[in-house]
Length: 316
Image (cartoon, rainbow, N blue to C red; front, side):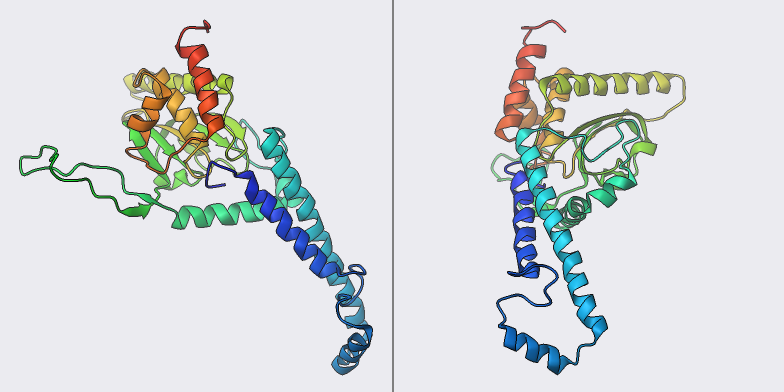
């Protein structure tokens, strides 16, 4: 979820842990049996006698175990299924996110709680405690010029909820709303989180993708054009005095590392700030947000997008 490589393995892990928990609860008989079969029947009788269990407790325990087994069994199936969808790069409408408002319906939280709860918990902790190398800034001499004789320091800092990688261009995660900025445009790439910046953005584009799964070349082109159009609309409104300041564009996923970086590469190239996506990544993004990275599929989709829409092999 936070990394861009093998993200689906986290859901494989959740499924596996749930499966182990299910079998621990069920034992060798089933969830209605008060204690696992690993305990001999004579010992179980002694435990029951010594505890003075009443009819109520003898009914309650199997019911609790049945409930726990049902939840763990469901979690096994659900998270295993989602891991498969990650690999297939399919089913991104499953969670039910509204592409216009960026909201996730209550039925999704109720139906898919074994997916939502660990996803929210992990993302919150990763956002709060995740670190990265401090952005590179060459030391300067007494005259304020870059001092090539001194090496840039590299220390660990907390990953910002969003970083301005180029003037007016921001890469961030699902907690970017904490910046309290007014956005000219927001590109939201999350399947799993509601859009918290919706009320503070002039234009909104939702392209929900599983964590670690990039936009297709067609989606990259759509997002890049959206960003440029959002900037132009803001500037037109600014001329009429309806908004103030320079246009700010936010592209975010869950953590602001992979999905958002992929789209930002395309947007910066489309804007004419960099010649290709490799240059946009290494010179335009990573110096100010070193945690950004691309997996092989992200690079493949960017290369294909660049070949079709930038290098002139296909007229848009």
